[in-house]
Image 1 (cartoon, rainbow, N blue to C red):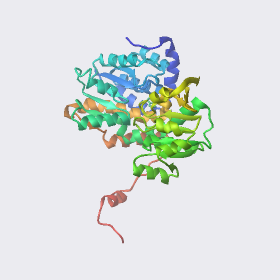
Image 2: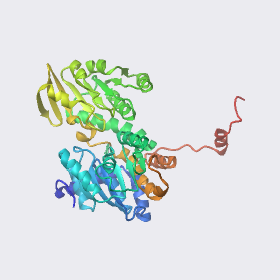
Image 3: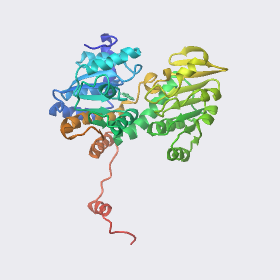
Image 4: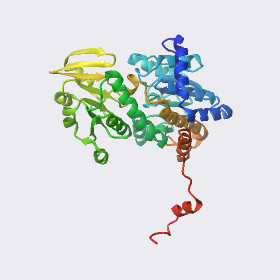
Length: 414
Ligand code: ADE
């Protein structure tokens, strides 16, 4: 039995899911193949993902492949209740309600694990963590991980010999992180900031904390909207890359002084803390686009504020000492709590990887160790070639002579 908000929302969910499907044609091709080959026949899949219209298309693909699927949310504020209702009506066990308490959220994760999944799928490694703690009685063939933060956790488990089963780091496929993390996070995070504030971005000082794939995407989109972009980054190569892109590069304190908007995308905790709040301008807007809500120290911000008021949907005003600090989406992923996540066209490639990773685990689990794997590069090439063609691009074909030249070492200066 599913735990959802309201089954009557299912028809609205169908509209949303069908709309996303129009832009998810790589996944559709895989789904059509899976309908014939049924590669996941008889398997239970337990997924902990953002319950969006794009995720729904992935869940339906897994079902088409023959799997029995149970889904819970990977963030208490990212669930689309209409989508959840549609899936529940279509034979997917769903435990996800937007805005649930933390206790309820973890209850939902446990309900998914109660289905005894053969394969799990995470966005942030929460199911895998439970499978190594409270639910270590459950054995799975393998798991898949969607996001950078989750992969970092998993690699740490592998390094410390704690991992109990193989995991595919879907995030590390080129057709995932080079597109979803960059173009997806870039667009959806700026979308979240604009939806929450209705502010003109042009001319503002936008500070981006973190210049990984996601930070790069956010900086690019903010710059494209006319912002003066400053990057804060602890890795010198990345910091230099940001500088040569034309952004200002400053340390966190200096950047905090000038910021009109700060977007954190670091994967680290408390990158904005009291020493930063102390120097910020009054009216500064803070948003987080990193996976967990730990990047802004909201506990201290609240403790040291005389008043906290919701001034409009998704915007909380903290009267911190002598100034006002505005926080979007409770410091949770601004792109999913305020906006609706990455556009379907980019999730198409991420979820094509997820679907193929499930098939790959089913085919290979007997030969896999308890390690973090990436999918073969041939999968990236296939997904990229399909997407390129669908988007109207043409691939250059090299002649045999050119291929031989690239393979040879004998030819130098002539
Ligand atoms: N992560 C970021 N955007 C997403 C989306 N649209 N669906 C599922 N997971 C996401």
